[in-house]
Length: 80
Image (cartoon, rainbow, N blue to C red; front, side, top):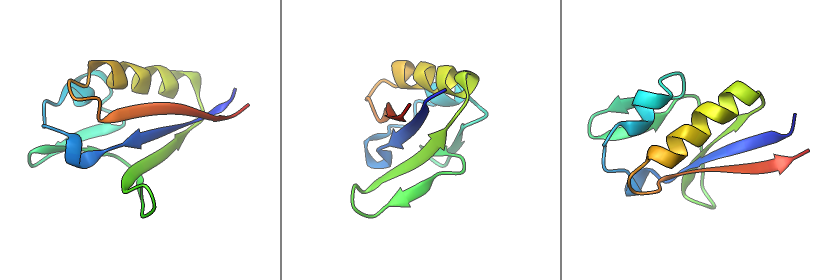
């Protein structure tokens, strides 16, 4: 399976917790913002990133991307 990267723009997050509802394995609400569990902060892009490698994890995070009301979550393919 190809690898994918979750890219999370935390300042855009409004704390709706839709991502937490559909993918609690990856997302949790901390204060008034969601946190991408296990992610690292990219200084260049100013966004949080996490590599995923299974079809199940991809589906969970595509669902989170779709339900985010402010489009703070993106899932991008990084390799085949």
